[in-house]
Every structure is written in structure tokens, then in C-alpha cells.
Length: 454
Image (cartoon, rainbow, N blue to C red):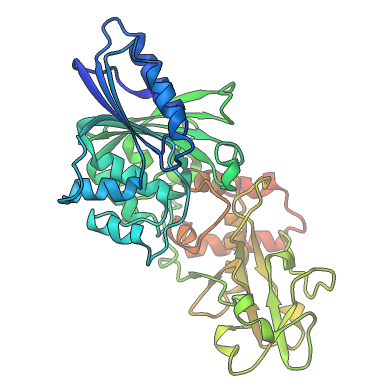
């Protein structure tokens, strides 16, 4: 991380380390400075809210006083509060300087909508849902022009609606210079149970956006390090109003991005995708282990394999049915063919997107179906799809090309309906043709499925 910074251009630099811990990142930065021919003067501000860690920071900084012309401040208190008051002005808080460099491994914690942190951040024009993105936004705001920021953070901000304001905030104020992707989802933030890929990102305040260097490794051993350079239009697609941040892992663009025929939205093909509306813990009193006279089928991810619908399943811990009454009917869909995609994958899952088809003949005389919240459902106006279209969608989504494309902007265990909605698809006719092919195949292999897209 310290090596990603450009060498200081002047005779002085000012470093910010927000959430400094025991100072490992600042130490790495200062070591780099000390190795220079003529080290610049350096002022360091380290923020650490844990009073038990601050003595380690003082001790670490004392060790550099013989090697560098250094002025160091170890600051307690709440970084968010201090930074916002400095940015917005507060009679009772001294303003912080503008920094030339910021290096951080920020805390990972969700921000409640009614919390003091949310109120403070909005005063600074920052709308975000997690402390890690708040720390990055505030640190970026406190950089001087051409100041540089390097942070190790979860990848969750790259896509999804909740982080859209944060993405827009960053892209408006800074250029992305470098992204390093850790492929393992259980390394850098394992103590916080962050089941996402982690990245190191380098931003430059107020710089002209140019090509972006992307490096990858499985973990922090870097034994399989690879590096490539990509045009910024491959990182944030020019026509993407959501500003998803893609992280290509090879110099070649994936087949979906290159295809002239895979360029249609779900709206273009007359299909909608929604999150399964049945939130089981809210309707707990109406759930039934097995179907009864006054129930309809309730479908969970465990009811699906790649090709088949397996219902009811008496050996699973989830209910197989939901009572039909005035309280539940509004959450149900008419019987029909639907394409469904699991919302969550496990850490070890080889694929991010796993699509299946709901087969209505598996439910005898049922007229309605319940889709539990851990499923994404493709439908038309809350009704089923034509049989061939449902199979075509599922086959397309199960291709390796779609999986590769999806991984460029999604690095966590969740597949949101928004992600699926913003993807590009073949046109309706092509999907129906693909569905007819799938129906003719008894057990298509992955190679056979992928060949249909070639």
C-alpha cells in the first residue's frame, strides 16, 4: 500500500491515517520516506479511538524521530465527528490541515439511518451506509489537490444501490489510479466476518482520469500477482447511471462486454426481476412444514437444482408451504414458469449466479406460489414467463461468460435484483431459441451451454 504512492513532490508532506490501530500502515509509509535520498519534512496525524492502542502509536512514532524530520499527532476521539466539524466549520473544534497523503484500513461497521454518524456525514455532503466508506469519503475530502489516498476496504461499494451516492461522491472528486483485488473472501477482514472480496484502491484528488492499473492476487502473500492496465471506460461503463465499478481480472474483455448481440435490458425483452416477496420471519405464523389443505407451495433456494424443481422436500429445515389467506395472498404469484436465481452464495461456491426454472407441473393443483426472500424471480407483471423464455433465461445466466462478467462488478456473496436488472441480455427471440435448445437437451454439460453463446 505504501508503495503505491508517488514519491512526494515537495520538501514536505502531510499524512493522514484514520483508524490507525497500532500504526502498521503509517510505519510502512514512513519507512519509504526514510529510505529516500533527501527525506521531506513530514507531519503525521493518526486517529485511533481505542485508548489502549494509542500508546503503541506514540512508541512507533518516537522511533522515527532520529530518521526523519517529523511532527506527529496521535488523536483520540471520533474521527467522523472531528473530520466533519473540520470540513464544515465548528467554533469549538480546530480545523485539520489539508493532507498530501492518506493511508487507511478503516473500520467496517454499518451506519444506522438515525445515528449521529449519519447526521454528521450528511452535513459534509456524504451519504453512505458503512463506516469504511465514510472514512474514505472524509479522508478524500481532506486531501489537497493532487493529494493521494490508498485504502484497503471491502469491495461491496463497487455495486448495488446503497453505495451509489458514495461511488458518485468519489468519482466526482478523484481519479482512480490503481485497484488491487484479493480473490479470497476470508482473509483481510476475517475477524469481522466480511464475506466479500477485498481491494486496495488508490485515488488521486482532482486528477484527470486516465487508464487504471488493476493487479490481482489470491491473498496477501502476492505469490500469484498479476498486473494489467485498462481504459477507464472498462472500469465504469459510460452509459451506466449506477456507476458500478468493474474490476477486470485479465487484459481481454469478457465475451458479454464484447458481444454486439448481448446488449438488451430486461425491459427491452419484456421481463422484470424482483426479490422474492415472502420474508419468512415476518409471516412465521402462516408457514407450514409440509403442504396442507389450505396452503400453497413456498419455494426456497434448496428446492432447486440446475435443471429441476424438487418440491416438497421433507428433509430440509425450511417450510414447504405457506397458508393462503388475506394476509399472505398479496405476497404470492400465480402458478407458471419462472426463472429464479439464488441471492446468496457460499464462500466456496464456484459460481456467483445459479439459475433454475420453476416447473408448474410439480405442484399438482396449486394456483399460487410463494417465493422466499432468498430468491430473485424473473417474471412479467408478477406472472409467469413463456416456457421457452424461462429456460432461455436460465441457460443464458448459467453460462461461464455471464459468471465472468458478473464477477467484474460483484465481489461479495449476494446477487441483488438490481445487479441482474442492470446486466445486458440477448433479445427475446434469441432467448426463446436458447430455451428451445435447452428443452431438447436431457442433461447439457457446462461446455454445451457455453458453446450456445459462442
